[in-house]
Length: 492
Image (cartoon, rainbow, N blue to C red; front, side, top):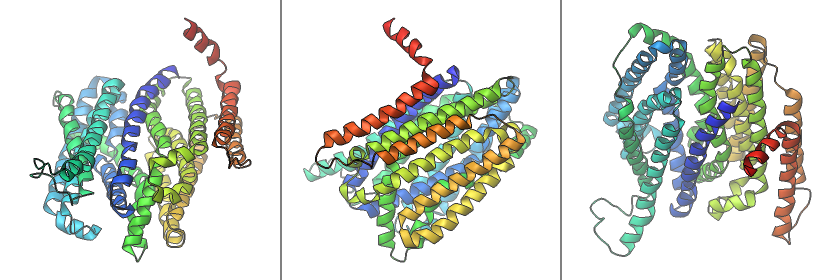
């Protein structure tokens, strides 16, 4: 637990700091881009890139961890084989997109901006290739190097965005013409994709030293890895579709495309506010996946998995309450004409909690090599997401998408728990998990019970008091043993 917590903290700091920095692009976009429709374009195309990234990695990250830990003496051969395979498919994809960008752009509704498609296609290819060196850094337990490179990508993206969307317009308004040879004031949202391309290229070049390994390609090993990983591709596609399908199909569910883009922009911006929960889940995942494979042979591994689940849920609810209690402050991250969409934030936060619990539960089918279960669960979730979006979005707009995500991850979580207890029973502390869940929901309900319309100080004091109640519950039930240790270190 200490080792897992330490690595989660390192990955978490990089993930939270990095994604927080990236998160700050949301107010930049909402305040700088002309309207919510332009941010709707960003939301839609980035949903496509997230989907394509899963396709181009086709489960080989997890496959690498599985086979590198299975035979540590041949880990370099596993890495080289994985890198070669993913590298070849990434190059093929980038060439395909570059050649057929116009017809692809026409199908997606961006026929006037084929360069958007070309840029994002190359970005996805570089990200897919880079995912394997990043996985190698995690395998080598080098979280600081991993974190530094991830932060470099995000910082680069922010710098380029600020340069193109803030600095260049300012210089142009002052009739400073040295930027005229590369800057077009009317290109607008296109510079979001240019910035992404430049930052990804920067980190791809920084990863090249970790590509220079002893070349050793093993075709027989690759067949075994693909047999293990391809079911994870189905899992990954269905999983990412659960996250992005609403944003992909949203424009096709409205007759009025302008209204669709505007609503999608509002939904995408408010969805981003809830990303703090996703940051925590992602940080936990980076540390937890190598942890479960390394711990598998330990006789106390199931107790460790149960503890990890409990602590994940505890801190997830802490983040949930912190977000919903202070949403009146967080709303200033986006422009006021986006505020109508803030009602999706609590729903999206719970969706992320269900998603994180599902990831915790997924260890049983990964450790027992029954990855098809994960694929089936995600396919069921994808069907639920698609059906509910088709039914709800034309009537309720983006609220329909939010509830579709909530139901999707709840169904997947329950299915994984049910079958997991049959195939690899783990004694999760359901009593405490239930207490924390009930407490968080009760405190959330109590936050609406008392109104302080005339005093913001009393309003936030009351909600802070409710927050402290949950923290005291955590300390009393599960973290009281930490208090003496923290005191001793502090005074030392």
